[in-house]
Length: 267
Ligand SMILES: Nc1ncnc2c1ncn2[C@@H]1O[C@H](COP(=O)(O)OP(=O)(O)OP(=O)(O)O)[C@@H](O)[C@H]1O
Image (cartoon, rainbow, N blue to C red):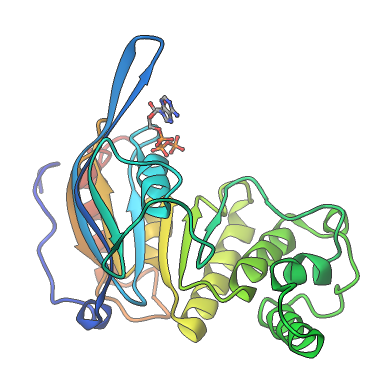
C-alpha cells in the first residue's frame, strides 16, 4: 500500500443512521498576528451524527485544536459555517462541554464539590442524587470528600469526565484529555470513557495525535493533513466494542492510518 492510498471504504456504522448533530461546511481558518498570516484549516467538511464518537487525528500543530475550538464556539472560522442541531454556532454553549488537556478540576473543592459545581440550580435532593450517580459511574466511591491533590492523575481525569457529564451535556469536546497520563492509565481511561459513552451515548469529538487511541475509541477517525489542515480521509472503524487490539481488522485499520499519515516505515 502506498502512503497516499486511501483505506478501503466500509459500510456505515449504525451511528451514521442517526440524525446529523453537527455539521462543518467549507470551514477555513486563518490566524493573523503581527502582520503574519497563518492558514490553519482549509475547506473542512464534516457531518457528525447524534451519539457518534469521532476522533480528529493529525500531526502536532496541524490544526486539530483549532478545529475543535471552532466546533465548540470558542473561535469563529474565517469562512464557512458550523451548525449544531441545524443552528449556527455563534459561541460556547453550556449544553456542550469542553474538557481541556490541562486538568480543569477545582483544587479547592472536594470530589463532591467539583461534580456538583455546575448543578447549583437543581433542588438539593436531585443534586445529591446526580452527584452520587456520577461518582459511582467513574468509580470514585469512597473519595467523595477528597480534594484533587489527594487523587492520582487518572482519578483526577475521571473526576473531570464525571464533572462534565453531570451537567448532562448533549455533546462533549475532548482535547487530548489523556495526554498527560502514563500509558497504563491512558488505556484504563479509554476503557472508562467507552463504558460511559456506551451508557450515555453523548456525541463526542475527541482530539488525539495517537493513532492507537483513535482506532480504539472512534466510530470514525477523521485524518487531517499537515497544516493548513484539510481532511485527508475519514476512516470508519467497523469493529464492535470491546475491540480486540490484536485482531487482523484492528491491525489493518491502524496500519492503514499509519500509511495514510506517511509514518509506516519510520519506526
Ligand atoms: N490564537 C492563535 N493565533 C495564532 N496562531 C495560532 C493560534 N492558535 C493556534 N495557532 C497556530 O495554529 C496552528 C495549529 O494549532 P493547533 O493547536 O490547532 O494544532 P494541533 O493540531 O491541535 O497541535 P497539537 O497536537 O500539537 O496540540 C499552529 O501553527 C499554531 O501555532
